Amino acid sequence: AQSVTQLGSHVSVSEGALVLLRCNYSSSVPPYLFWYVQYPNQGLQLLLKYTSAATLVKGINGFEAEFKKSETSFHLTKPSAHMSDAAEYFCAVRDPSQYSSASKIIFGSGTRLSIRP
Amino acid sequence: KAGVTQTPRYLIKTRGQQVTLSCSPISGHRSVSWYQQTPGQGLQFLFEYFSETQRNKGNFPGRFSGRQFSNSRSEMNVSTLELGDSALYLCASSSRKQGDTQYFGPGTRLTVL
Image 1 (cartoon, helix red, strand yellow):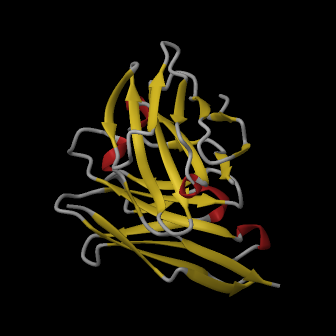
Image 2 (cartoon, rainbow over the protein chains, first blue to last red):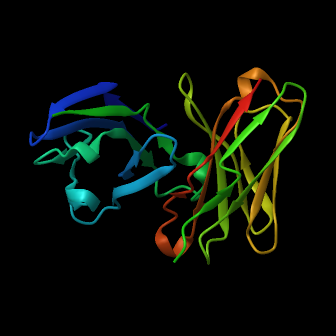
Image 3 (cartoon, rainbow over the protein chains, first blue to last red):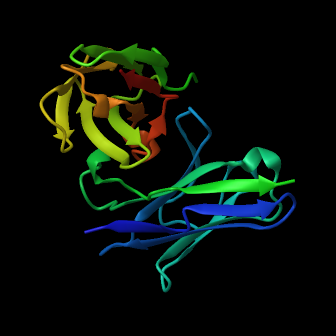
């Protein structure tokens, strides 16, 4: 069975500071991993995804994530936070070897990112 | 390419009524999935359609149903609305060519009074 854990339901950083949002997964096979961002009353927007190619994945809006198999982690980072980054972020995991069904995608509980001026 | 669109964006209903939500996927995407998002339960999978066939269903009561049309557009219906059905309903589409990555619409905010 797969699972995903996002450490910290709320993270607050100062504008210009490093953003680090943590995601740990559990999977019996090398997974596909995703980060999504959700702004208030909006849908989820794909930030980046890992599908077994390069372990360092670059996404939109200056975000990147590194797949670390030994740590079963896929943390999201951004060197310098901007006010517009304030949103909720979701990590998701899918077993690529199974039938590609949406029911097999496991979403984390989300991390709300706040940016202090 | 236009993204996933959902209509209406906001809806207010009263208990006992029924509601139909609509979703138009990204052009070329044949798979459409529906999710319910609430503060307490997070994102929960409702069902998935592919080529007009429901191929998976989440753990929701039979009041929740859906369908997909030949042009891949999808609708979901909730009958006999309850207060607990108040949520953001998200639709996502995907295609095998894009690795089955879920692309989400803006959602429909349903409020049940």
